[in-house]
Length: 259
Image 1 (tube, rainbow, N blue to C red):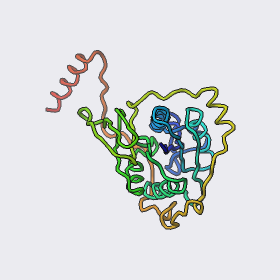
Image 2 (image 1 turned 60 degrees about the vertical axis):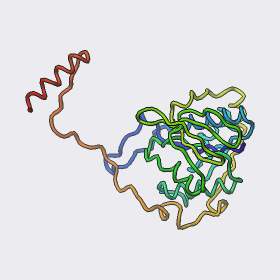
Image 3 (image 1 turned 180 degrees about the horizontal axis):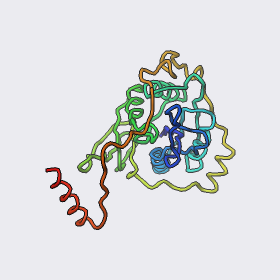
Image 4 (image 1 turned 135 degrees about the vertical axis):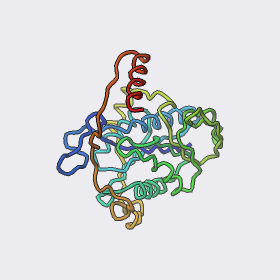
């Protein structure tokens, strides 16, 4: 089975801050990490490949330093890594990103199964997985919480819902986005770290993947972020403390004042 896992390098959420002058994310001095949801996608890909036989390729679009995230994925069990990197990709929104990733997957020979994290913590759109499936012409399921069985042609799984879960069946090839409940990512092994250190990451440019110049980067992005800002607090705020029962009584008392 050929499994491709899409991963993204993102700023560490605990270090994220806004530049007060430009009102954009300040990235200087902020540590970058693998998107947390993508860790679970990598783990599930490695687990499935171990059970069914096959190869796991981790794929990322980003600057050269995104190679660090790919090496981390390999140290956790992935077999090979591909970085799609080109200045022409700068400023891409989810539409342009899915075109780039789809072209890259086609270039490396396609996949029987594509796995993505539910969403990236820096954008939180959850659009790339479904958009990529549409670009590749694949059926997809979002928010997968458990893989129940797979015979190499069909996968039975559970999809997380607000009030429980759905049990679904999908034929391969397909694309799934996963949530954190699906597994517990393993720690890098010593053997994996040694492999990752020696790994030669395959790097592809826009020309290598035959990307459409009108569908990549800022030029190919129909949406653009004009400004990012922290909303200012509005109105008076009251903090409740104590046990749950005590807080409920305090809330009831406050509501009585305005009613």
